[in-house]
Length: 371
Ligand code: MRU
Image (cartoon, rainbow, N blue to C red):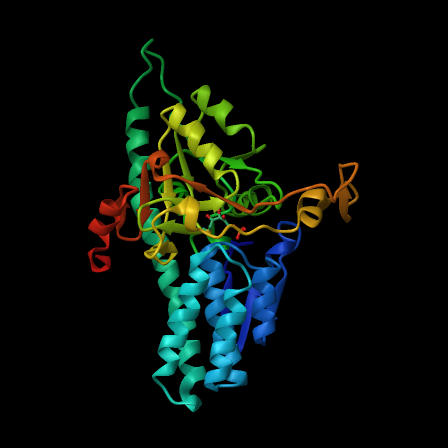
C-alpha cells in the first residue's frame, strides 16, 4: 500500500538485507530497521516491532533465513524454530512459517539452505499479499450488497445516505500483513472502486493498534474513518450506525472458532444482538487445522499489565513523546492480549478462496484437501 505516495510493504529484503517497519513508532514516525540475526527477528516479534499474524509469519520466515545464513547446521535450524516459536504464542502463522522452513531445509544440503529459505521468505510475502488481495475482493462483494440495499429509499421516501459504515477492531490492515491487510482489504477495494465507505476504528486498548495503526493506514490512503473508544461499538450498533463488522484473526480452529485481539468477542456479541453481520477475514495460514475448541485449546498471550495497561505512550501538545499513567498504581493491572469468539457469533469467514460458514463443514468445503 502507499505511504506518503510511495508503495510499501511491511517487510522486504534488498541486497541481502532484511528490513521492516518498526510499528512501535507509528503513527508519529516511519522508522525502518534491519533484521540481521535470529535474535533481531525474535525481538522484533516479541517486542511487537512487527505484529499482526501474517506479518509475524513473514518475519519468522525471514528470521529462519538469516539464522541459517549465519549457521546452516541442523542444530541451528532447530534452535531457530524453537526460539521464534517461543516469541509469541497465539498467532498460528508463526508456527506455520517456521515449520514450512524446517521441512524445506531438511531436504537440501547445508550450503544451499540460506538461498532456499530467502527465496521462500520472498515467495511467502508475495503469496501473503495475494491472499489478502483475494480476501479483499470477496469481502467487497458483501459491501456491494450493502450498497445496493442502501440505494433503496427509507420507508418515509427520503434518500438513504448511502454511506457504508464498517466497524473494525485492532489493526488487521496492511501493516498487520505484508500488504493489503485482512479485515481492511475489502474496505480498500471498495474505496478504490469509488464506494462511499466510512470506518469505525476501535481504539483497541491497551496498545491502541486501532488508534495508532488502522487510523494511520486509512489516513494515508484517504479512507474516511472515526476512532471510537473500545466501549462504543455496541451503542453505535443499537442506533443503526454499523452496517457490517470486519475483523481479523490470529488463529481460527478447524471448527470456526476465532481467536483475535482482546475485545473482539464483545463486539461479536453486540453484533449478534443487533443483527449486524460479523465477518472474520481469515487467510488459510491462520487456520489451525489441529484445533477443534478455541476456548479450551488456543494459547492466549498474557503480556505485561504494568508496561502496557498501567502506562500509555503518546505525543504531547508540544510534539514530545511521553509515557504517562492514569492510575494510582500501574502494577495493579492484567493484560490478556486475545480472546476467543465462538463460531455461533460469526456470520462468515472470508478466506482467499471465498466465504465459508464458520464451521468445520464450511471450511472443508473451501479446503477439501484438509479432510
Ligand atoms: O497483538 P497483535 O497486534 O499482533 O494482534 C493482532 C490482531 O489481533 C489483529 O486484529 C489481527 O486480526 C490479526 S492480524 C490480521
